[in-house]
Image: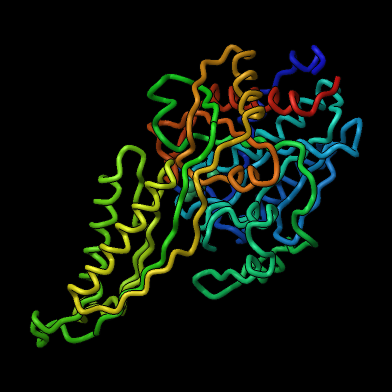
Length: 414
Ligand code: GLV
Ligand code: MN
Ligand code: MN
């Protein structure tokens, strides 16, 4: 990279201002955002991003999954682009930073390059991936996963929400059903994100050099017993599906504790039917999320879950259907891209440490098709997927500066 590139700086106040403005779309009373994938609010956030990118001189397009690409040309446009981004969809009780930070840090890189009239050798692209959260439409990371060829496009478009609406229908409704998905070369992919855990804050480091991500498995469990009257039905003859589910919830938590260090185990959703106070629940649906940085340990957690669910069903006379609906293995990032992030933090004089991502990110799927790395910044008390999610303007700026320099390392220019 030419020396001039090393002196480029992002505009911290502008990045912060953009984040705050984006957070108005779907703002919640507690200071967070509710911007579920492919809702009208998601469309609004996409349109704001698009307007900002066009104002910054980018050409904006979207693909068949509604992934949006804002392209700033390079000097040699035959080179594969250096790409950055994240997602604008949120959890139902999400924060201002999860996803939006990575997208708007990418926009700030473009704006900073424009301010300096800096021409990169390779083109730069800022991407908004569709449905990263997996909350309205399961699983997570569907836009990037389809781009990377992990999911077939037709399967992704057929995913339904709780009301039976498909991603394809909702993409068409909000005007983001484009043509094709993936299959093109990416020079490198970088993603900035809040850590969503407590490690950087505890260590007092503004920058996490993300070396990879832990593995993850999602399950859906259906337990079927028998509905009957809460009064006349003797305890001895009941087939109470919610009692079986309760045993599974406790087992999931126990598995998380037993597989330390590193394990995480969560039951995030439970639906009991008919959900009437004087009817013994006849059917329960619940979800399980298991994670571990070591694939062999994650496989052992899987066995422990299946054993516990089988025992809970047997003990309560229930039929059990347990399906693993999604998984990815622990994913190391590209050594050179990780080194570019570390070098950028060093050059900016920012305290940093290596860290493994506990969360899922679009970067995990991108790592399968392009050299990839991530940059983490701390968030207050390590809390995320919560409306009170918070990060400081200084840390947000630090990650943006590292993103700019890491991208320039790969894009070149003068
Ligand atoms: C993504 O938000 C995850 O669940 O890690
Ligand atoms: Mn995220
Ligand atoms: Mn998230």
